Length: 507
Image 1: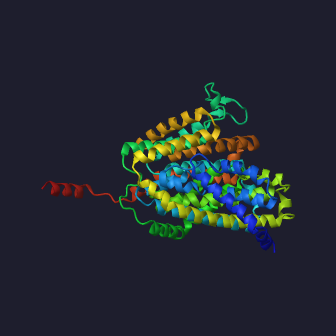
Image 2 (image 1 turned 60 degrees about the horizontal axis):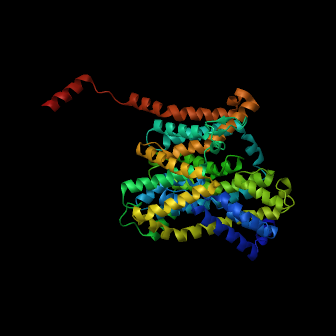
Image 3 (image 1 turned 180 degrees about the horizontal axis):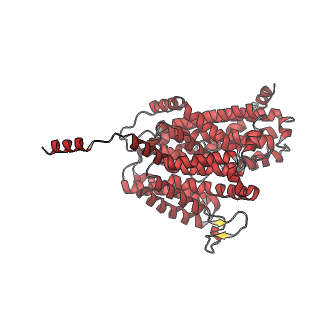
């Protein structure tokens, strides 16, 4: 049977190479600024010297868990290792500040593993039937889906919805800096060569979270965790693990959202967390707690992180179309080994496809165990006072920002957005929604331009697009309609009764 043939390919030697890839990826992505792409790029030259099966196992071991290590630093310190870990800070870091960091990390890691297993299962079951569904989503549908996700996050992200919309709008505006995709016209570059490629993502992420949080910690004093006697780590781990299954709806919803994002070529790795988070927040009974330390928010962010890898492998293996930027490197590796992704993959190399599915399973379980083992020790750092914690984090942030492209301008961007994020935080504007607008802005623009070129303004009348835009209208006007209905239902107090009540009060 094909599944057993794929398992047979994972010989002890091949399994060791996969394990090395998993451990290397975990260490790299914990370091701020060094994401999964960096890990794959570093390991690729070595992997290409191996036997094709061992090389593929190592590359996939790096890739399929490249978002998991983000959870640790994103939750404990509010510093995501890369953009694909930003949503983990929304609720994870508030939990860390109240002494529940280990619980949040445990929930996030277990949710990531469960999401990865769901992704592997869907990849195994759905390759023959998902093609028409994937093809139903074209640029108009992706444009509407991203727009709905961005606006919805402004309304459920906590605080004033108007401030949320302003934050998202600012992020969207800054996303347009650089060369326009279709015409190569300069926009807001002010003649600076540094801005031709747009503002760099990694220094912005590190500035908004690492530098901002360190400035806030210096201003506040003390340590990150406000709990003087935090609950024991064993109890928190057990509780966090139970949370994932207690909130199984959130785990399943986010995993499915991650799958859809992974299957959509070009949406990018970071979009999965935002879409998964928004999907769970939209249907949760406790949506008002999202962004304030809700365990459902942690689960929603992390379940999509690894499920998207199973989704991204569907177009990669079945159609030869990379589901993400990291999958483009995976395809390049396949081609270097003489293996052609596409329909031939499902006929001539079905045993390799099943080996990939088994790698998804084992890599997610191994990474969960490794990360859970190191979490209690790392969590103790949240008890350190600011004078001991701030300097090394600043050094790591500068290193991460500079290593992303080796430009001195990245360091200026890092500290500039650190100060900007500090002001956003002080005045109640959401850094998270700002970053969502910045990350999803280019994807929104490219899908809009493609929609106009292919369909013209008529793209707004496509059934799925129209349905999503109607949902957007309901998100915006729904709260006002709800307040109006509540006001109409509220019983009015007769004037005479009101007067009697006033006179009794005066008496």
